[in-house]
Amino acid sequence: MDKLEQYQIAIKQVLTEYHNWVSGATNLNDESCLVFDDKNHHYIWCFLGWDGKKRTNNIQVNIRIKNNKI
Image 1 (cartoon, rainbow, N blue to C red):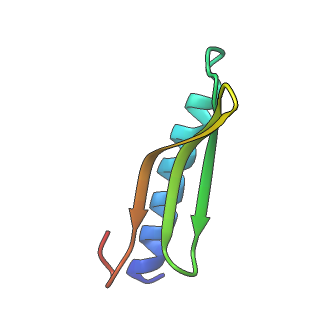
Image 2 (image 1 turned 45 degrees about the vertical axis):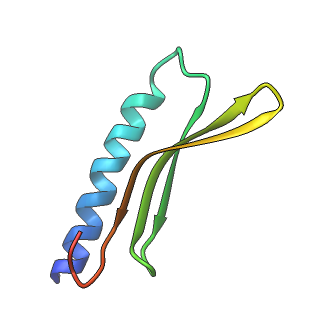
């Protein structure tokens, strides 16, 4: 397993743990969402929801691997 694969696995593990932890909360108005793009090395944890008639998208964590660096 090369360094890039190790980074991808670690990032997905940590973000998934946070997502699962937060998703267990009963007082959330927004939905916790994970976006994993292994091809382009982008990893996002965000909240999606509505504020009245307006759609909301709040990015909590945005990670990108470029040149084998996070």
